[in-house]
Length: 498
Image 1 (cartoon, rainbow, N blue to C red):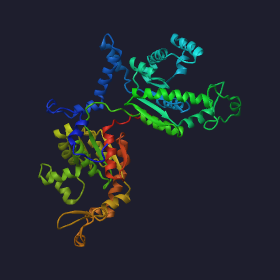
Image 2: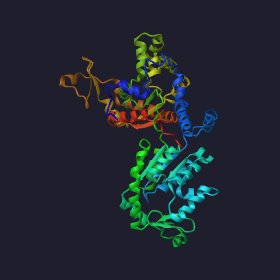
Image 3: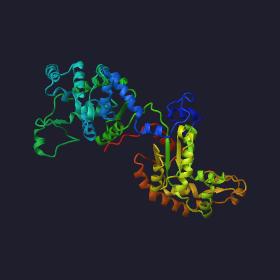
């Protein structure tokens, strides 16, 4: 990601808009059309349906597609968790399964399945050779994933695939995970962890002498050292794991996340949960409608300008629109002017007329827009929404009062040249110029504090209204803030799970 805006604005815009060819694009795109497509995930729906058709190749595609759409399971968990012995992958898999209300599949519970001839074969083979043949294991997985609970609530594969052969078999039969997590930790840590494992023979629960010791003395007394956890045996298993994992990973280049397991389990789980709730970027056409919220001096105007420059979005500053409407003597001039002269707020009804006139223009519809300066409170947010202007990305820039005061109270203007200065960041070149500089009354500390208080009084309601809003620390280098905003626009919003 770039540190700041590049000159390749058209390339950035093309990336966001799906590379639409101007010669084949419709000349007029009704604003409702892209909004409907994005809101209902039409492109992704069609893409998923085509993927399922090619995987299953039904004799009659129409009933298959109807059945697929009725299931409405395009976003259920489809997760693979891999990791070396003692990395905690089973614990993380169980926690994810419980949190996401999904189904956990492991070699152990697959071969223990009742009323399955495949599972019976696998048990017999395991009892004899302590392994399950790859083809038999994948057929077991395929059988389990076809059951209704996995279709409706998704699945989490714990430690499967174990080899590259299994990974390729999984792909061949059309099992496509959305997220693959690999836990990683130094071998010395894993060997030490494994040595502390203890097994409850009655319940099958696994405890640890350091991390998870049962409080009940009755359970403590019956715990046993499990087989196969000695230092030599663990080292041998780790060697085999490392040999296999390097050949498995290339099968999942775009959906893989490696998480360090040498940290508290809750931290590993938090990172894993955040990742599986993310949605991978699709090729769907996307027209950004960005709303920047923040107190005066938080940098909204600069960020809007950077987005407009890099991605070709239309920079829509509400205050500037009102000034231009007066300066151009537009049809709204007479309505706005009395409020300007009295220095009172322009009514929302007038603002929306001016705003809608701009947002309905074809450049905004086709290229997208970045709006700032409106809405400032919940009532204005409702008005904007009722007029049909629904931003698909909302950012709140949080900046403390001291930083904003530093940014604004030290601003000065040269009345002779009109040049703007900042006493700290851009001081005047001579004492003569400094002596004649003037401060805008709006930049007085009391006025700034009043405007900040007004914003934060409404901020909580606005954040509640825009539930998918992203809150950023605006008190840092502006190009760092821009990188976060850019990432939030380019990547899909995470899917929130209760």
